[in-house]
Amino acid sequence: MKIVANDYNPQEIIRIIREWTELSQKDFGKTIHRSERGIQAFELGKRNYNMQTLIQIANTHGITITIEKKGK
Image 1 (cartoon, one colour):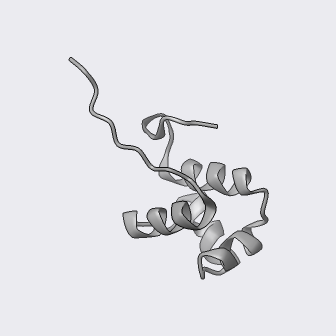
Image 2 (cartoon, rainbow, N blue to C red):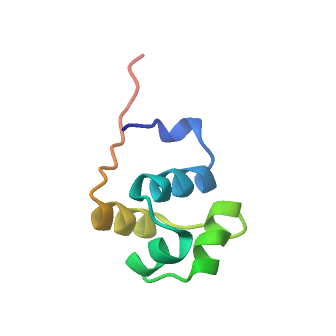
Image 3 (cartoon, helix red, strand yellow):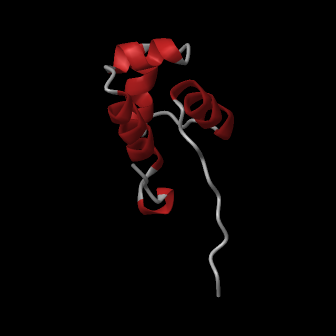
């Protein structure tokens, strides 16, 4: 599956990735050393995550992050 991240809010991206893994917030959090409440906060937009966290999630769950420059 593929998404264009520009089409989503940061909290939606985390939720989509978690849903791809078919894990609960608690179990997903365990895979990246975060609490269930931490994942909830990411998904609700109450806490921001950084690129390092996104890369950790991607590496842990076999997801590729691609940044592409649009043509003119």
